[in-house]
Image 1: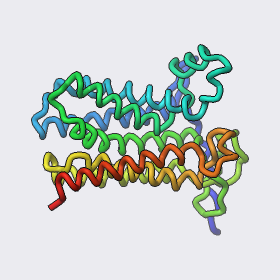
Image 2: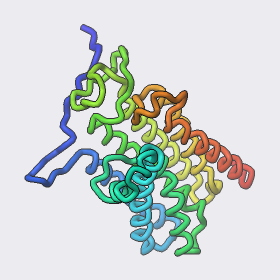
Image 3: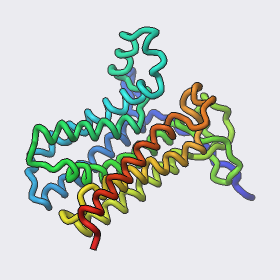
Length: 271
């Protein structure tokens, strides 16, 4: 007997006691940070960087990712509601719980956060920072997208493929087998992490400045552009668009990644 669908009926909540609950998404989000921190600590130790800066860098990354992702979601996907009630818009955007996070906003947030970190710690080269942070960002992306799968959110379009998933916990869309788009992105992020980690392990301090950063942006948002064709739109206004918001935002990021890679290889060709 052939399997023509996978039934996914897992609660997003691991445990709930009164109003307190632990959710899969939050747990996986935290795991991404914790494992990433250990990897960056290893990098700092190997390259003789001051390990006292790790805590400041971790805090910068957490704030940059969360605020960037949250502000990005509201600006890119909820911006039309700003004039309805500006104060309520800003309050919902900045105050937990966060029900919407945009990966493009998180990327911009990290780039800005690392600029701030460098200004406060001028001994660091900016591209040195971004090249190492994208390694753990790829791993974090794998955890986060798997968290989306556990939450039965950001689902794909209907499919008759044998790996189609019936998301029983998703009530936003018709319950039919769908592309597990979250897993496509999670696996892609995990593969990228392996590639970036391998390249860093091979060249370490000799890695061309900006090369890993460029690869990260081209890979993540290039595949994101493609995967959007397999996903349901996040907002209704996207239904009338030839390309959805995720694809439109990905185009300049991909171009930015290509420019950074070309610059890196021109500055220091790979032997």
